[in-house]
Amino acid sequence: IEAHIGINGEANLDFLNIPLTIPEMTVPYTTLTTPQVKDFSLWEKTGLKDFLKTTKQSFDLSVKAQYKKNKDEHIIPIPFYAKDFQVLSTPNYIFIPAMGNITYDFSFKSGIITLNTNVGLYNQSDIVAYFLTSSSSLTDALQYKLEGTSSLTRKRGLKLATALSLSNKFVEGNHDSTFSLTKKNMEASVTTSAEVHNPILKMKFKQELNGNTKSKPTVSSSIELIYDLNSTATGTINHKLNLESLTSYFYIESSTKGDIKGSVLSLEYSGTIASEASTYLNSK
Image (tube, rainbow, N blue to C red; front, top):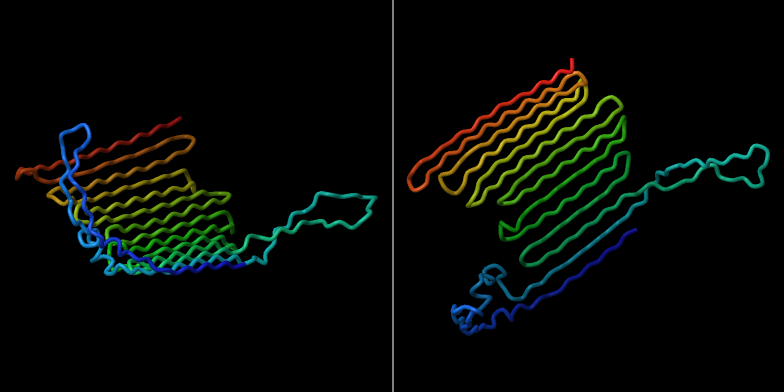
């Protein structure tokens, strides 16, 4: 099963060249007045001329969706049994088709920006979901790429794995996580990192979380933050947490460290913070 839609057209933005005139006005309930604006061109004064290049704009839009049937089937037995009496032969099972594969594609093109999006859901031995969206433009700030994948494995237990990534001129980020569940163990792992870089702020962030129940329930977490403002202020923050637990005891350990350095009106300042704590409880 497939569906497709395509649209293309043109837009005339000549009306932006019409000069605007706004008379002087008094703000209600005050004595304030707004200045007069005369012969103001939205096309010239707002930067649209440099951004769009021309008032004649065209675009193309394309959307495509597809469903592909899965050959696999789910079998459900019918709980019906007559030992000594049978009129007609009845089926012993109900066959239900398994979910198939679904894909979706989107595309938009214009003189300013081009957008593309692809989404897919695949049901095979594993269930996999995937998406990708990206843009291209003469303006760097409008360019980005966002990609994600998630898969569910059903062999020897359940395992869910997810990965995300984002890239842009000002922001970058990654996320990876894994959750697995078996009859004897449960395990989880999460890692997230991000970077921000713009004229005002530069920042790096990283977070890790791990846990399992192999020999005993154990959880460990760490967070790291480094920042640099568009001034003399810089600093770092680190936080770590460990947790262990059994029916006989409970143990938790935490540590936090941070520092900051900068200046205000040629006066320098700095500071540090450090904290450590641990707790142990024994039921014996």
